[in-house]
Length: 460
Ligand SMILES: [Zn+2]
Image (tube, rainbow, N blue to C red; front, top):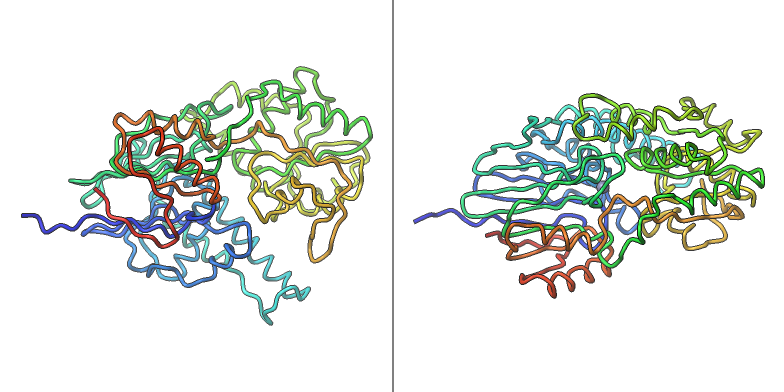
């Protein structure tokens, strides 16, 4: 008779919100943390980043990351500082991108703490960063790229990475033991990505954990000609303004640049300078172009990017500042994507007060971010302790999502070789998660839950 207990799964993040992904899998042999994300967005969630870790970090044997986005890997330096020292299993591209993202995150944390100290924004006398660059370097040192086969044998379980088509290196994770199986969707891309290879079919699993960022929405039909974007850029240039596009440095920048390259090639927009103003985006672009990941990207898309004559790189802070008084219209693609930090914030501070300029928002804007406020039409945004009037045009572009919508999420579940027994819906605002759960319950014959923070379930 087996004395083995059933594995347990605990939801340590992305429960009730879209950020902070962390899931603890405990078997008799080991404790594995799937994703180690930072909470972003509203303060009530961000404060959780500062709480003591809900599980003793030194008791975790290993971490596995689905992809390099901050809300999936950004807590890693804090976990390492608090005592985690095991391997972090990732794909080769995720290892490179996570290094870029964690260094940037630590830098921003340090900068925020320093600014808070200098300008007295903080309630604390000596504000500390959540983690330092040294913590990030230690975390980066633990990243362990898996073999090209993307299958790992850990004690008592087999772990497979399946391309998810969300950003370069992104994967769904399939875990299997003797008498249990578990599939994490990770963040799922749309069925076709403009630059990445299509996502892989999921493997059969009795328990599935699925994201629900767009669980209650259908993306509008893709606008292959990017007409909304083209119209907004033409209008702005005609009135002598500049266009600022807050874009996630990783993947979104590549996808936006590809769209701009296509518009210029078709003469659909004037051939004005296009500045990539984010050291992180420039570093990421180099990873996308690296031959080492050629099997994951579309060569034609990269050629189109390479052919952009007006593409400029703003490396230094001085170059970045100069773009606020460009002399003639230009397009600035800058991070962060939800305008919560990074260089795009100073561009917004300078460009928002003038009606001739335009802010083009691309994709999902989480509640509590400046991006979301702009989408919702606020008249002022708070930047660096001051309110800035919003007179510039604000346009939300719907065709840049790298998240599957409700139909596509349910479609992905339908691709499972056999229906799962249980589906846990995570990584969504509560309404989105509930809507997706209802729909899965109706369309698939399985048990569905929307787990609460710290809820623990047993696996079959
Ligand atoms: Zn993601």
